[in-house]
Length: 152
Image (cartoon, rainbow, N blue to C red; front, side):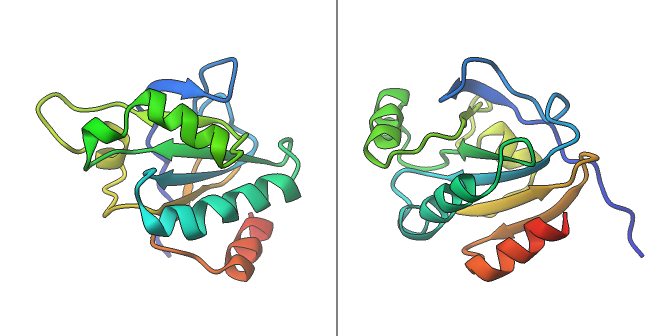
């Protein structure tokens, strides 16, 4: 059986919808669900964001932390912080959202690179001990993600 790996720390430029900077280390003891998205990603807007909102409404933040990770690897000029703030307001996204930090001279942000993400949407599940338990590119059906969260 393969040993679980510790989830890489998030490399964040700025946090929105929270009064404090968050880190995986500080959230130890909780299950963490990270939804990596872009505002102009159809799969994110149609599936992953609504799913994350439903999960955030269903589970207590004492048991599960939902984190949005705005990880921009294309259309950089259109997806600035001011646009993201309007997007969060219009879609009524209330859970914490992090803006992935960019690597100098690269279109790929740091957290996206550290997790070797293929694109958005990507769902990441981290257990209470900080181990990476799931990373999936694309949509995960609601019933499956619910079962995976309950198992953690």
